Length: 95
Image 1: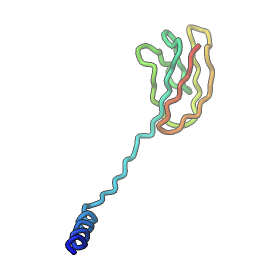
Image 2: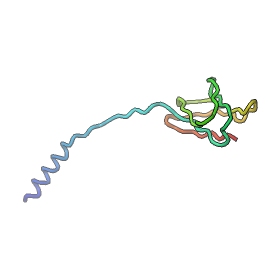
Image 3: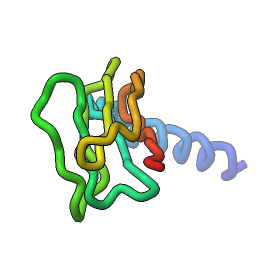
Image 4: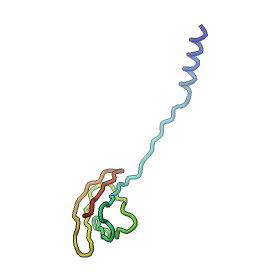
């Protein structure tokens, strides 16, 4: 007979434990990661200033459609349009 009141008490105490709902808003950023022979190339993303790939080969972008051109000297190695979703990392292979 002691079990039932004890179980009800435990159920009541666990229900009052305080449930908290939290909302986490992530930054709206996506990434392009350059793989392959990326050293010494120049990357043009949309109409922004060219990027020299040196020690870092991963760059953050706003989600959406982006035009990417990769040059080694005057030679165009890659010309691609990417659609990148929010929080996505897209790899671009450089030949």
